[in-house]
Structure formats: structure tokens, C-alpha cells
Length: 301
Image (tube, rainbow, N blue to C red; front, side, top):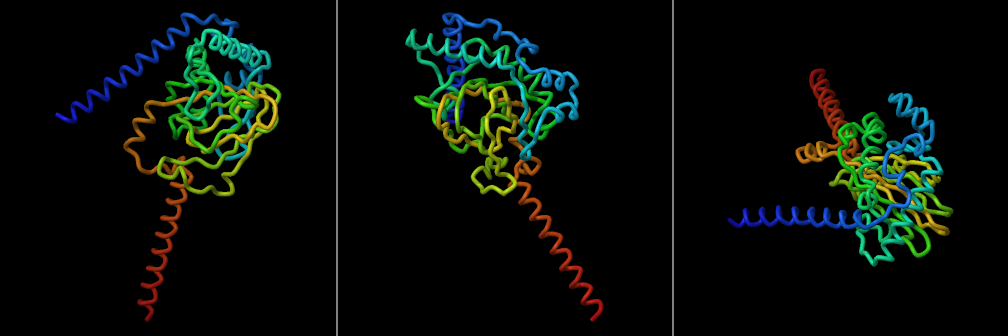
């Protein structure tokens, strides 16, 4: 009976949490007046740079690689957003924050790590961001991240983060609650704030050391995107001057998350699992060679 009480309580808590968040979101959308309504529907030609649109339209690994750099394994960088879109989204976020302050409305922040920023899905941009994931992130992820559910991305968490004076300064070493993360700098003028990457890890190995080839720093450029696995460990260095705002889209796959429950070997994407597997293979080969040499020695004795 104790188990069923626990199960029912757990289920009801989850249900009420979802219900509360739905009501919270509805309250915002019912009262907040958008500043730039053109943001709330997908308009590729005004959102994205032409090279990005063409690569997505061609939809091949070759077309994606033609606009991308892979400066570190599993980290892809490319030009993505037009300045006009960046400015529109920045002004929309500022308008939303002004409404929040004027209405004395308490909003949920993007995650447990960032004290500043806003969840874009909560004030009406969910449909547009769904289309961004479905039509633009998933085709790329299907090619470059199939081993972590890149082809089955089916939900997202979209938000902006803010760094600088009177905002968050830096962001500690962490992994994202996503299968694939899109991180795009919107602006404004700033110094510092580099992303540092330290290799992809499963839950078991998340705190293990990094190899030299896994260490990489990236400097943000307005309109420039970084695409990486959510389990790719990273952080943000201090923004030393100015004000930096980034758009983040955490893309998730319910299929991958269900399958992962029944797996123990993640060597196709976890750097440490792969190293352990290679070490086991090396030891096995060495043992087999030693045994052959021993038998050969006995036969010639």
C-alpha cells in the first residue's frame, strides 16, 4: 500500500506542477502585449542569413559543413541570425522585462543556474521556437548527433540569458538538460564571456578529467551560433564589460531518453566510456598476445 501511496502522490504532484505552469503561462500570454508581433511566426528570410537558409534547403552533410566550422570534436559554429532579428528579439525581451517590472509580476527564470533572463516559451514564442527546432536544428542534428537522438528531437526549452553589470557575470562548469543545445549570441557590446568546453560525458563520468583534445574556448559573435550535445561539459567565463545576451534552445528527444534508461555503454558519445572501452580492448589484445607467446614457448621447449 505504501508504494501505491507514493506513486499516486508522485503522479499528482507532477500533474499539479504541469497545471500550475500552464496557468502561469496563460496568465502571462493573456496580459502581455507583444512589441514585435512578426517574431511570433517563423519567417526564415528575415530571421536567418542566406547561407544558413541555403544549407538547410539543400539538406546534406556537405551543405551543412560548407557553412560550419568544427573547431573541437562535436562543437559546430556557424553564422545564423540576421542583425535585424537579433535587434527585434532584444527589444522584445526588454519590453517583456519592463512589463514584468511594471506589473510586479514574478517570473520563472530559465534554469537553476541563471538569475537573469527569461523563458521565451512563457510569453508566446513557443510555436516559433518549435518550428526552429523542427525545421532547422533537427536536420543538422540528424546528421551530426544521431547517437544522442538528433533525428528524434521532439520538445524544447527556449530562453535568453543575460550577462554583465547588474546581471549574471559567469556560468559554472555544467551539462545541459538537453540532447542538443543551440546557443546564439544576440549582442550587445561586451568583452569576455567566452564559452569553455571540456568533453562529452554520461552521468557516471560527468566529473572525470578532460583530455587535451577536449579543451576548447569559443568567443561569442553576435548572430553566430554554437551547436553541441547537451552532455558536452561547458561553462561561460566572466563578461568583463558591457552586456551580453544569448538565445538558447535546449532540444530534447523523449525516444532517446527512454532508450537511455536501458543502456550502460555510452562509448558512441561519452569520451570517458570510449577511453575505458579502448583500454579494455588493449588489455584483452595484450593478454591474448601474451598467451600466444607462452604457448609458442611451450611448443618449442
